[in-house]
Image (cartoon, rainbow, N blue to C red; front, side):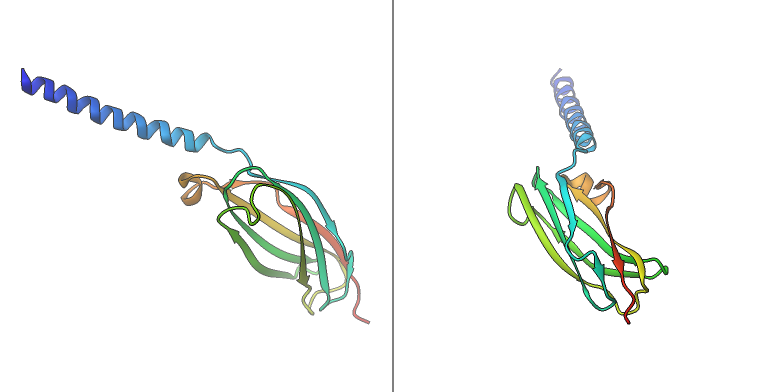
Length: 151
């Protein structure tokens, strides 16, 4: 009889552990709400010469404390691509709330004249499942600008 009670106890502990793990995984998988809202993106220098500086201002609202990673690149109309350093943070840099960030980006000398764009591809992770396997993604941040001829 004691062995049977011990067996039922072990079975309930193992079953409880499996149910807890399944519930936690389901909770993590369902947590897909965006932690950041991009409210406004402005190009302060809409026309840039090759070798000049592109100045971009972005107004964001941080809603949750999540890890962020942003891949950034510049593209011109002549199929040139220039990778910029990534932006990584564990928590929002200034806490939750609404903030405006202004950044200067060097436009490469080899960019040809015509339309160009700055593109940011953000991903976010608010729990371990998102950090290591399935991050939260959103639409790319696309900022068009013009590269004028270097004459």
